[in-house]
Image (cartoon, rainbow over all chains, first blue to last red):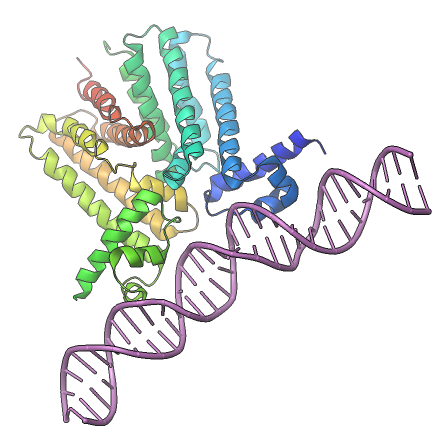
Length: 186
Length: 186
DNA sequence: TAGCCTAGAGAACGAACGTTCTCTTCGCTA
DNA sequence: TAGCGAAGAGAACGTTCGTTCTCTAGGCTA
């Protein structure tokens, strides 16, 4: 089997297990069983658990932002697109295995002690914030930098609130708030 | 030494260690060393690590909300009080050991697998949301239920954003957003 | 002083962790 | 067919985990 195929298989299994149970609660043996890749090959692809965690996060970042962009760009009008972010969040929140933001979870769990993971989390949040900035700029909003920061706060707040309450409605509340912020003059 | 004194000593040490390093990364031996309480006494007070974690969260909930309320109630005018929440958050974010929301961190780390912890986290968030509802009601805002939800999302988003970026400014952005939501007519 | 309860110090337990090593099998080349 | 390198299966390594147990010391009552 191809090396990149094996890597994807490992990343698939590891990402799902890490997301569901947390990083520390999942051992390498369990990733071996779930992926069907032997420990030897596993450590050939990822020389330590830390690098595997970071690789999971970086791949998830690309996939997550890709899926968000795909959904947002279905809206033809630039003015609708910032709000479409929250519609996409709502759909995500209703998925049965939704368990919050993998990056926030990893940050809270690893925090100090794993600089590579912290970097991956920071990079993800910076990329998301940059994407939101592009959306509000294209929408012609005033003070786009500040608005992008506010939308980023609403996105993170909606994710954590939805995860903890178990209700996807947080996306609607955040969307309502975003609509007010986008059109302050009413 | 009094039993409640010992319990407080254990909770002090455990809460600080859990918050700094995460729950799973801190062993009972480390809590023994930090608190100066023997393992025997420790297990007499808290029959398992899980109950200790839950006790830490429940005590922290009371302290956290108490400190918030103390700060907010310095404002004489009801209309200023919802925004004072975000001023208090800013001060919290600038503390050197700030590392995000202990409840969100615990939820992300334990998630499935510890119902008692999940309950404590849900209860905390519900209490905070209820407190915000009281504030916006006293401020005479329209649609207080929806507004309380929105402020709760802003609070959680500000906490996580500040933790990950390492900058307390998220509190200011959230405060600006809250001000717009509180006075939609301009 | 003698006996008893409590508590401290820390060893001990079985399990699980991340990581490495051994043994075997198998496909390839000469 | 003989020999070689790669890889799978899983045992083994040393460590750490949550929890319990042992041993000892010291303060109480009679």
